[in-house]
Structure formats: structure tokens, C-alpha cells
Length: 105
Image (cartoon, rainbow, N blue to C red):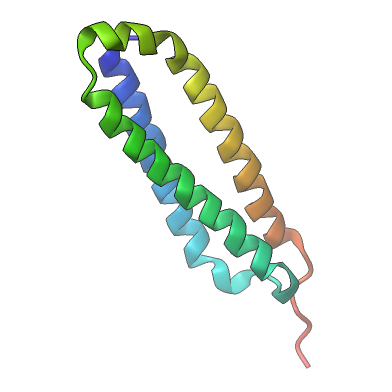
């Protein structure tokens, strides 16, 4: 993977995460009461993932070309790991919408 390609993919993932987080935050009122705590925890994990990606991107930007050659080999694994973490946490947040909403009295 080339350095610019890595940067573009990372920016794309960060942007998608930010958009997903915004949509989920906007729907927070639709969460059943018994699922709100788990929802908040999983949403926080998505935020941490987004922030971690931003931080790592900054670190990779500062690497010299010779060091990038060493890092390049792990770039593919990096995206696989991020994708798995995102799917796991997003799935858990999405499950909160599937729980029974509170009954109106």
C-alpha cells in the first residue's frame, strides 16, 4: 500500500465513522430505556476508534519514507483490525434500536 493511498483510506474511514456517530447520536432518543447504557458505551467506543485513527494518521504523516516502508507491511492489517472493531461496536449499537421501546402508559 502506498503512503498516499493509506492516508486517503484512513481519512475516508475517519469521515465515515464521524458520520455514523452523528447519525447514531441523533437517534439516541429512540433507544429503549434498558439499552441506553450499553448504547452509550458502544457509541463511546466508536468515538475512541475515530480519535485513535486521527492520532495514528498524524503519527504516520510524520514518518520518514524509510520508516514508512517498514510500516507499509502492517497497513493492510491495520484496516482489517479497524474494520472489525467498527463492525463489532456498530453492530452492538444498532442492536439497541431493535430492543423493545418503552411502553407508553
